[in-house]
Image (cartoon, rainbow, N blue to C red; front, side, top):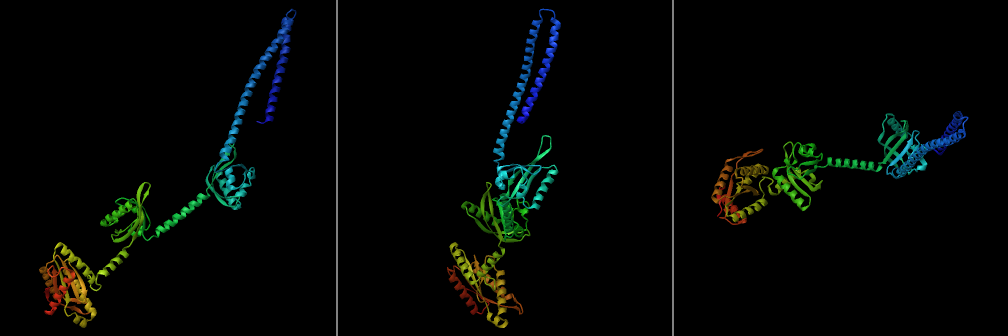
Length: 516
């Protein structure tokens, strides 16, 4: 209430009080004088009665004044106390506005029904760059924040449509242009304000500058996209799993489809099959041991093992990774790659290094190495060992008659025949030309002689098929040497068997001779 209103109210109350007093005085004077004259006329008490009437009037009016003024003072006291409370509330509200609204870290503003700004806090000034004095009481802020008319129209239209449906605005993002020309993303929440009678008053809007967070979200999405693309194009399978016996997968990349034949969701948490169950059991034990060593030594691990594809095919893979603590639990993270072709190539190269390319038997270098080891083993454990040396009789005639390709075919067929007829612990080699050797561990000289005779008879009785020529019959001359009878090292035994083979040739070929 204003001071003018207070003054006019007081004058009205004073006028009413004066009118009431005049009316009561007039009635008292008029009626009391008549009553006294009527009661005390002609007696000596009239003057005394008049005096008493006067004092009674004073007493009554004083009592009435006291009652009226006391009530008025009480009402004024209540009014003053209420006004003091209102004053304090206004001061508290002002302090709240200054302490909370003005100093809030989020944008707070109020606009009336005409779009004019009625409140503009410090955060609004800092984010937009526009001071409070520039925007209060004006609707110019819409043109300042949204200089593009089309975009401004879309924003205002969306706000009006939301309010028209009787809804408040939540998580509504707009792109404003700040005073420095930089565009910022603001996320708004707006609530409508109403008078006590329910009539609309305006809108309070709270805005958060989400420019940086949206940029970070976009960068994160881009990083996730790049990571997904990288994982999808890895030549293998990336994984994260528990350090348990089954290698329970918690994450596998899309590459597991091509590697294992299983979809990622089929391997995760062992829903269809555990990845550890696909590993060859003897390889799994070695891999687990290597992982535990790597964890103890705090280093990465790497190893090769055989994996079973969904179709049942077994193939070689290479795995590299590292153990990490994730949420207090040990996890294994790494990559698994298909190296089956490389492994096959390595095995083929290894075979080429020790195998004769024509016959597939061990070559001379491998024979020398393995036979030396066999002799050392026989010496250490005092066990028997025999060496059978074969040479194809009249091989030059075969080459001259049928050609060298046919001669090569004869050697291949002969090698296969011998390989199929010896024990699993025995092994054959091509020492050079048409000379073949068979190492027979745990075999005495007499047993080796019997085995040599069987080989001679088998070769003589079995025609060898040669493409384009037909069956070709050959014979072999064989020399036999044994440990320890004919020497205590590999060189002596090889020389003794070779000498015995030449003795068999000189005695008429297709013979077996023991070393001297």
